[in-house]
Image 1 (cartoon, rainbow, N blue to C red):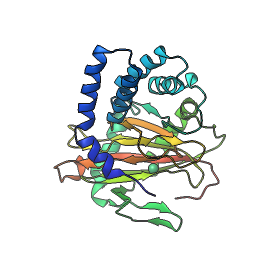
Image 2: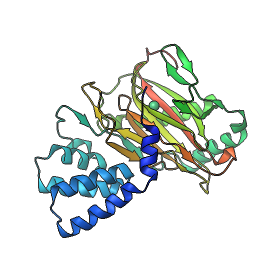
Image 3: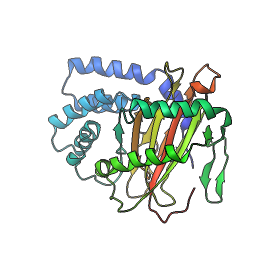
Image 4: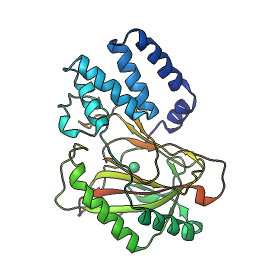
Amino acid sequence: MSGPSLDVARLLGSGLLERAAETLAKRLAAEPDDVGLLRSLGRVQRQLGRLGDARAVYARLHALDPEDSRAAYLDALLAGRPERFPARPPGPWPAPYAAMPDFLSGERHRELLDHAQRHVAECRPVSVAGDEGTVQDAEVREGLVFDYPERICAWFRELVAARLPDVWQSLSAVPLREQTIELKMTASRPGDFFMAHCDDRFGRRVSFVYGFHRSPKRYSGGDLILYDTDWSGEPAPETDFTRIPNRDNCLVLFPSVAVHEALPVVSDSSDLMDSRFALVGHVRVPEGPER
Ligand SMILES: [Fe+2]
């Protein structure tokens, strides 16, 4: 594993991207069809996690040049219209993802928070899966994991499985005829993070994160960074990315082969119930080993 977690967190926290977006928007007001300016603005908006604004830019670029396959792809991706994906030429491309806001009913969401309230004190440090089994490695990941009853596991898995037929195309993934869904419940305190990595081992095909927290929210950060990935398996420079803002009650799925990271959580609260909670997991082929 290797990753620029702190670099990205610093970049996003520096205000540089916000200033770049403002400058580009001003210049575009004078030159609205400047393709170079539009490409730069689209990139900055995508990195800031302003995905609606980014989509508008890529739709404009696509309209200006219907042959621009990158603009066509990002327009389709950010609009949630995978049927419009063009063929991807070789090289790094933005990772596809599917976001499902309001994933759980209010009742199910409350059930998770009630469980967290009762059991968060029993949390233990989270491990990462390596070749030698699972290990704790504070340079790669910091956070807490806690147990949950089979009842929660069963209904959550069922809800994820029910949505999978809708997302294979969105994720440019080949549907699995049978699958197993791995699941972990985590709590991220101030400073907790998971540096850049990919999950495509042990037969994993799709990764997902469902974030939840109590209201009012007492933290920022914890966003998902999806790096542009070379789908031929070649390593890609981890420079361009899409930031998926962390939202309560939203399930985000992405291909396990995509390089991704979780940005550090920022908070001044020491109450564990103010953590960024998540159910995270993978959809994998049934014959993979349990992790
Ligand atoms: Fe992961």
